[in-house]
Length: 128
Image (cartoon, rainbow, N blue to C red; front, side, top):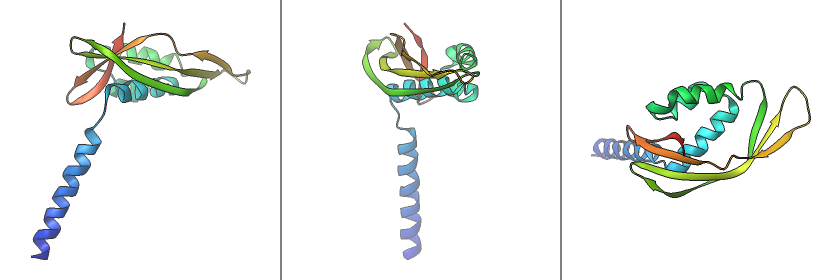
């Protein structure tokens, strides 16, 4: 009897962890994409992008590879839908330092990001 209970608890724990791991939101997808972009992490950007946006994700990673950058006060929110896309806007500051120069701050561009659920996961899929 204890063996069945242990097995049942193990199965329930596995299902719970799987459910938690797959819970994401459009805002989390866009925030993760922006973090990977400023890190210049091409592989992560591609994995966070919908299939139609992967080529642009590669270019986005290249634009931050030669600088040290971070995002301060990143906050994203859902602002609506457009067909299958959930629209997300973000605020925050990009702090960029290039080759030892003084850091420069710039607000995130005033863009509306498009998030799409693809293969059960929210992905960043372009801007409007």
